[in-house]
Every structure is written in structure tokens, then in C-alpha cells.
Amino acid sequence: MKKLNIYYSTEFYKLYGKHAMMDPDTVKLGNIINHKTFEVVGSLHDIGIDFTEKVKSDIPDAEPIYKSKDIVVGDLSAGQDSIAKISLNFNSDHSLYLSTKGSKIVGIAEDHVGENSLGEQIIKLYDKDKKKSKWDKDWIVVTEVEYTKKALIIISNGKNAHIELKAQSPSPISVGEMIKADLSFGHESSIGFKYIMPEGEYRTILFKAKAINQSFLNGPIFTTRDLTLPGNESSGFEMPEEPEYLKDFEWID
Image (cartoon, rainbow, N blue to C red; front, top):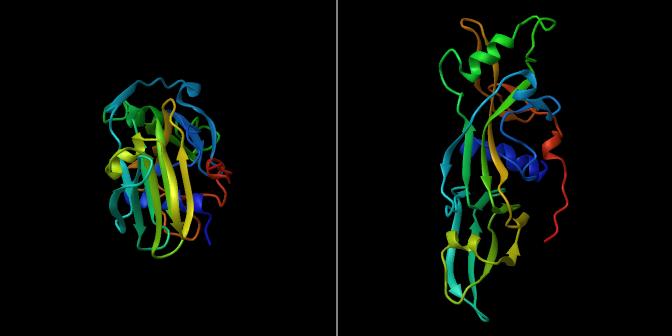
């Protein structure tokens, strides 16, 4: 069985084209990552490439929810002692649920077409001759990050799994509003992983990355790369078995 944290990242990419992290804030905008070791080896600034952060989406009160299609939200109810309850039902194995509070998406402003674009600057550093190249073909660069102030992560570990969410509220509230409240878990069945990331400052929870791809007809191009586990088809490269940013973690409920 795959480790749940690795499964979380790869499956999330299939659903949304973003790389999901269980260890918030270990990846920053402009970071350069070696895809074979998944270690951060530096930043664009380290190799003389300056960039401007551009806020692509900043809605302080937004509570985006990312989830597998098979997840069904149960009935809302108000329990005793001003506690609102809601159930999540997972109808397939290893379904993913991520709810966030205070989402903000920031990207590199120069990541566009043009002679001064990020891609053109990196291509100028790249040479197929490894001794001449100032850009390693194994490097990827983080071009977009999604920040959040609070997060709820759940992964099912069996068909017909379910979990109850509880929040301090005198009346029933929607599943989207649960993340705003003092949130806790109730009764559960067949849940493989659950975690409430405490509210705080903005931390990276999702990111996108690009890399050099050697095109036979057009030469080197700067393009999006996916991170696929060994044994699966990959449009770019394969992840190592235990990438650094997806190492095992111990969470305290």
C-alpha cells in the first residue's frame, strides 16, 4: 500500500493540477528543487534571476474546498452545548478532502511569454552539455504557491468511509463555514488520515512547478512538469520513492 502522504500529493495533482503538501510552508515561491532528491537546492535569486511576486487571487474570507467527486456531505444538525455537526461520506477508497481558510494565490509575474520571461531567462542558462550548463536538467522551479491560514485534510482508507465534523456553533452551519469555527472530529470509520492545521499566518499548502524540457523539434522549452511515482506513466519525470518534502510525519490530534 502506498504511503498516504505520497498518495495525497500524486492524487491531488491528478484532480487539480497542483502539488499538495502535508508539511505546510516547506516550499516557497521561486524555490529550485532537485526532482530526483526533492531537496530545495536554492532559489532563482541564487542564480541571478530576480522575479516579482504577483498576487493572482487574494480573497481573505475565501474558504476553498478541494475534494474527490465521490464525497457526499451529510445532513447538517445542531447538537447539544451549541455544537453543530456534519458528516462526510466517502464512497471510494482513498478519497481526498482539503478545506482551507484565508486562501491567497501568488505567482511569478515574469512567468509569461516574452524575451524577458522567466522561461527565456532559464533557457539562456541551459545547455545540453552538462559542463557548460548553468541550469541543471534535474531542477524544477516553483512558479505559483497557494497560501492558507488554516486547513483541514482528510483521506479515506476504505470504501463507505465516513467522518463527523463538529464545530462550536449555536445553529447548523454549512460545510464551507466549518473551517471558520473551532473545529474538531467526531465519530469516524475507515479514515486513513485526518489533520486540522491550526489557524495562523499564511503557509504554503499547494504549489505549481515548471522545468526545462528538451524538445526534439523546438529545442529546450520551459513547461509545467508533473510529479509521478515510479511505475506510473509520466509526462516529464519520476519522483523518488521518498521525496524529502513528503517524508513521514507525526501529527497530534
